[in-house]
Amino acid sequence: MKNIGIYIHIPFCEKKCPYCDFYSRLGTDQLYDEYTDQMISRISTSPYAKEYIADTLYFGGGTPSLLGAERIGKIIEAVKRNFFLKVERAEITVEVNPSKNDFDFTMLKLTGVNRISFGLQSANDDELKMLGRLHNSTQASKCIVSAQKSGFNNISLDLMLAIPGQTKESLRKSVDFCVKHNAVHISAYILKIEPNTVFARQKKCLNLPDEDEAADYYEYLCELMRQNGYVHYEISNFCKEGYEGRHNLQYWHDEEYLGFGPSAHSFMEGKRFYTPRKLKSFYTCEKTDDGNGGDEAEYIMLALRLKEGIDFGMFRKRFGYPFPEKYLEQGRKLAGIGLVDLRSSGISLSEKGFLVSNTVIAKILEM
Ligand code: SF4
Image (cartoon, rainbow, N blue to C red; front, side):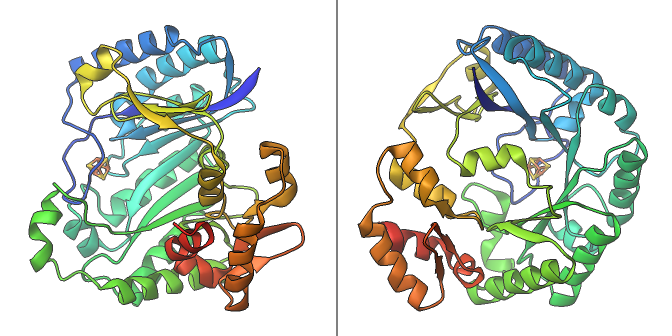
């Protein structure tokens, strides 16, 4: 039986952040109960149930912690029953907003969850306010410490780069906060203005850093991460040795995963599909076909996001032929200007290449 990653989308938030494009809405206890029941039913009646082993389970959102530990525990039990999830071996992550200090982390630990991803974004209160977040840095600190006291040591913190008003000094303060709180994993994304968000409407008066300034923040962050002993294992992700996010590694390795919930995407048996962004679509098992997946271009595009890049032996094993010369030719040119590391065993982007990853990957694929 094959291993897969399972993603559970929890589409509820206490308040919509002005930059956010993820599918989420306000919820109530009644709605959380109804959604939990629907989720368990979808998991139990999935055509893939009893055919695959869930090696990782990821609760994303939205704000999964709003469901509370008990409902999360019920969903985990359903995954155990239907996808042979073994809590001792699996990575089970829950995203938590660090705004409340009364979350029952002890009970969450008992459900088998072993990794927490906090949506910190910044440790500067003026930046958090600007982002419309509900927490401040003191609340975030209390929340993280509370999780650690309950036995969670695999903690990931999200940071945001190029926030209006951010400075290198304030970014350093956010990184120091992560280090001080013993985060073993840090995800850092540049603020992107998505259409149909409040920020998209306010874009002109937001005073956003331009692309060059955003790139400066990224470079500075990479430097700070290096100084603090984090491995830059993916374009936007850093970790202490051995703490790579296993669930997301499956995406970058172009492996199979199954998503449950509105807006959740899946890649199973060579096909990509997703549930439309509506609760009703999820409740009525609607699926939208998103074409075939897993071809060589997709594999290359995803694998090059990783520091390890592409191993030629693995490529041959997956596709049954050697890494194509046409990509190698581009790789040699890019290696000549320091954007790519080309070895006899594989190819990857250099740290400099990470900075302009979209351009470099497109060049290799000649898209
Ligand atoms: S809490 Fe997260 S998912 Fe919810 S609106 Fe804010 S950024 Fe989006």
